[in-house]
Length: 413
Image 1 (tube, rainbow, N blue to C red):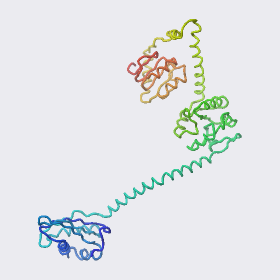
Image 2: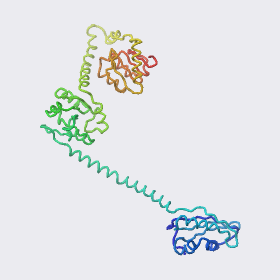
Image 3: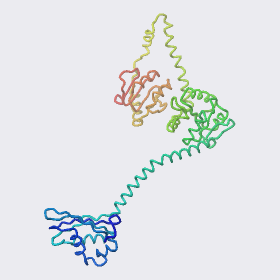
Image 4: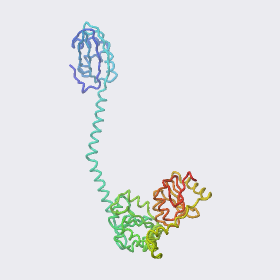
């Protein structure tokens, strides 16, 4: 009789029934049609709605316990929601089923399309997830490969020496000079197009001519060969900045993050020359200590160290004026994680990150009177300060108890 099923219906009317007696399923069906006949007019007559397929097969489930019958009525509907609600309300007017009193209550009207829509959403998510897992890596690899090939095609030969170079050599004011063609390719891979290769270890005339017109950044490998190229390049060309790959690594193999970090940490030519000047006296200093025993005939090596005891001078005491200046500088540095390098007149020679104070003192060697830092003073810092004749180290706190350097903290100031 019914022409639609719950699968094709838009709504499902779920009704609960309680009957004061024992009845059969046909009694319930008869009561539904009989007691709603003529109630809603001809357009909403249940029998006509079933014939036209707008109301599906009415399903009745009952069970009997202790002389009473209970169960549910399921009515599938393809009417609109207002008409379906009217049908549900009409079912609740049934008061008798067979000879027994009955109570009928609509529990819920379920929108079947919501469940279908939820299923569609969940299934679509699952399909998209599978699509992403299975195909996106291949697509990404394809994109990367194409982009890489395009960048490789951008390598051109520049100047009379036919040096491998990126496409923006003429347009850029800053030029990055690397050692070989592979280095150029690696920089192009990450979108750095103002690069050119030495194509060897000697400095070609093309680079020398470029250095007269452009700002040159020499970017070398982090090995002994890179140091030699720096020495030759700074002597034969007008190099403005020097950058090095991480120790033991070559420019052609480092990542984009390492390339950018190295270029950000580039040194000026003056800093490079200062490092060279301050690093060369180290060997003579050692020979001076080894020669001191020869001047005193029979003295043993242990007495040589005893002779150095007078070098341990009393710690310099900060005057109130210096303490005030130190405190002011320390307050300026709060929260910056930076450090001031000062000369004897308390002029600021430079400001560096706290993590680079030790390496900076090691490179300068001399000329530093005091260091003020936004951090804790540790043993490594006091050791290098002692070696470089720094008089004062001022910090927010200290983990050092004994040092030849005058260590001052924020509390002491």
